[in-house]
Structure formats: C-alpha cells, structure tokens
Amino acid sequence: MNKIYGPSVTYSMLRVYTNFIFKRWFSSVEINGETNIPENASVIFAPNHQNALMDALALLSSVHSPIVFLARADLFKKKRQADALRSIRIMPAYRIRDGIQNLKKNEDSFDQSVEVLKHKKFLCLMPEGGQDEHRRLRCLVKGMFRIAFSTQELLPEGDYVKIVPVGIDYGNYNHTGNHLVVNFGRTISIKDYWEGFQENAPVAQNHLRDDLYSRMASLMLNIQSEDHYDTFYVASYLYNEQMLKTLCADENETNRLIARQRVVDLLEQKEKEGDPAIAELDALCSEWMKSHPDVSFSSRVYEDGKKLDLSLFLHIAYLTVGSVLVFYSLVFNGIPFVLVKKFAKKSKGSGFEASFVFGAAGLLFPLFYLFYGIIAAFLAPSIWFWLAFIFSLPVSFYFFIRYRWRWKYVKERFKNISDRCDVVPNIRKCLDRLFGNNQ
Image (cartoon, rainbow, N blue to C red; front, side, top):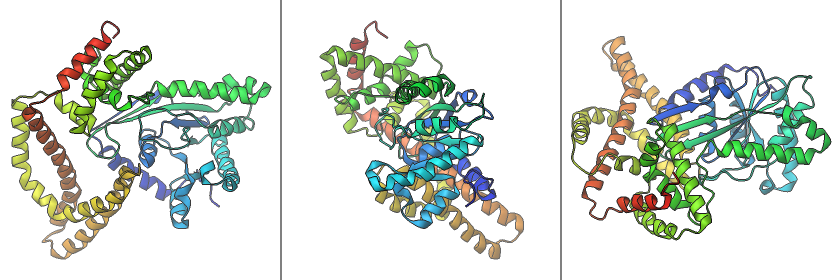
C-alpha cells in the first residue's frame, strides 16, 4: 500500500481546486498566527470541531503543506468511499460508539499517524473526538496524546513533536456568505512534557491535555453555559459593535471574534454571580432570535441602521442593473443549483449540510460546464467565442451567489426598517447595565 503522505499529482490538483472554491464560499477569510506553525518538524494540528469536513478544509486552505487527517470511522463503511477518503489523505479513527471490537482497528491508523510524524509531515486530529455545532470546546480525548508520545519515543535526540492549537470560527455553519476566521495558537512542544511522561505517563498526558484545552479555548468562541447558551450567543453578536469600540480595536472579523469572546466571558461571570438581569436578557434574546435565525448575518445588518440611506439605494440599484446577468446565470447554472439544493435537504440537521453542499456543488457544476462546453464546441462561431463562453459559466455563478447575498442584505434591511417592535435597543441597554464598569 502506498504511503498516505506520499506525493500524488491527483491530490495536488484536487487540493488547488478545492482551496480555490472553498475560500469563495465565505464573504471574508482571515487567517492569523501562521508563524506559529513550525517548519521541518513533526507537527500535529489540534482544531476545534464543529462543522464536519468544512473544518478540515478550513485548515487545509490555511496551511501551505499537505495534511493527513483522521476522521470518524463511520465515514469509511463503504469501500469506494473509504478509498476516496484515503486518496485525499484521510484515515479512520474508531471510537467506543463504533463498537469496542473495532477499537483494535485503530492500531493501523495510529501506526500510520506515527509514520507520518516520523517523516516530518503534518497530521491533524480533532481532539474533541467528534463534532458538535455548539460553539464551545468539549473535553479532549487521549488519542492525540498517545500518538504524540509514541512518536516522540522514535524521534532522534533533539527532535520533538509539536502540537499547534487551532481555533476555527464560522459566521454560519451551513450557508455561504459569512466570515471564516482561522487562528493558529502558540505551539506546544512535547519536550516540555517528555521528562514528566517518563516518570508518570498518565499525569503528563493530563497536564498536556489541560494546556492544549486552555490554548484552544482562547482561539475560539467558547460558550460553556448550559442554561443560557443561546442568550449568550445572540448577545455576543448584538453587542459586538459596542464591545469592539470599548476595546478600541480595528474593524475586522478577528477583532470582532475577540469582542464576542469578551462579551461571553463577562456574561458567564455574571451567571456565576447569579445576576437576576440574566433572566431579563434571556427573554429579550429569545424574542429576537425567533425572527432572526441567522444571528451573525442579521446582527451585522442591524448595525447598518433602520433608515433609508444612500448605501441601501446603491444596493437596490446594483440588484436592478444586475438582474440581466442573473438571468444569464440562471439559464446555465439553475439546474445544478436546484439539484444541489434538493439533495442538501437530506443533510439538514445532520451537521454535514455545508460539507454535503460544498462537495455536491464542487462535483456537479464542473460536470454541467463540461456538458455545456461540448455542445458549445459545435455551435460556437470561433474558438475565442467558445473560450469566452466557458469562462463566463463559473464567473456568472460566482456573480449569482453574491447577488443572492446582496438580495438577502436588502431584504433584511427593509425587515429592520418595518419592525415596530424592535427589542435590540432593550437588549443592548440590558447588557450595558450588566457590564457596568467591568468591560
């Protein structure tokens, strides 16, 4: 069997294509801390896991070198699917829920993981052991640490395994048009735990786990509250602009994430203190969320005001003028678009919706473009006309997606203007009272 980390022309071409379209799934992509990634070293990436295969793509699109991943074993049940996953450098990781009898199969994946690290290639394990759409960091499992220490025993003196904590933040898990922030934290070297591991392995692993947990938690939105999770999530967005100003931070998605983290930290502190105002905030945020399920998007549009202004008219003008181009896009992109949407219904609520849509779109649209290109080759009056037509297909779809984003924005603006029972001012006043001078 070929080494999973070995060179592959197919993998390289697929990675370029996937990275290109992946970054255009989002309205903005911000990557921070790349200098924390060691060079020429045995590196394990440890990201939070909330969005299925999109998490792997977020990491892969942020790192220049190829990465070998371990993923949940149930994705490998079918041979063709297993072969396809292996071809893109993904190996199975079995959990207790997959059956105790299957845990022995982990030995092969663990051995291959050690081999990857021995050859100073990049490896990624999701240390939470599974995904959860809640924006919180869960307990870390021990598989990563076992692989790290097992590899360290085989490395030459002076070489140490490095673990890079990663925080991934999405504006929306399932839909396009929102932000993506990828934070690489300070590297952890097994060197700092190696002596302790030789004296007492379980204790050293626990200390390493706690260190990694702390560093990962600081890189993401980590809402630990069970009783007020939705409230704190909504509040972190609706108070985002105010907290950004309080922190005197520049306007970008990374700083907005830091501001949301600060809001959540303050609210969890008030929750521990038993502040009765949390109950009032619960009611207000619950009322707002009923009509604004896309919290990130709706809260950002609200910041643009509740009045007709020049910006809104410019958006309307853009939609009007661009309607002709949208019609062209729908003629050639409508069928694959509808098919992807239809298939996506089966994945709703599974945690794999975005992964399914992204994969289906990445496969279906090129197939349709190939079909259109073959037909156009017989009808085009010249090669230049044919090339222009082929080039226009993906460009028109790119325009269509952004047209939909703008349409959604205008619709939300008018929704805010017509809202006679706006609770956002009351939410912000409540947060002002809660925070007082503690900001």
